[in-house]
Length: 152
Image (tube, rainbow, N blue to C red; front, side):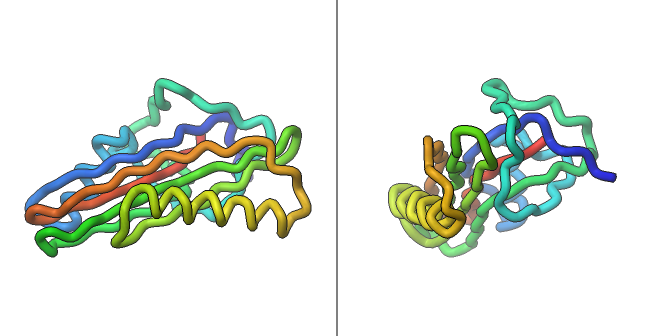
């Protein structure tokens, strides 16, 4: 049985490299979640999961449940953005939403906020608070933007 995560970190980073995949890897490094295996999850933050302000010291190679939005490109001049947000209820689950695309950070943040509000309305839950992190990047050779919530 997989145990319920007890803590989370919310991160956003962008990077430039020689190739799209290495730009994504560099963004993971900048975000502090590079030397693990990200296991993509959907959108639920467990009740009582606490935020770690200074990051989490994940064991190298660990399987880390992560909700993330990421985009990479090798098109010079392309604008990339990624944002992730968590909507918090007072005493129930949190809902994570992410967005990545060819847009500004502000546009990506707004989309995440709208999706969180819709997700709470769909669940009939009262939205207590929202936390969003985002980033944007203008590609020179190969760039990537990443925003993630990693659980542990």
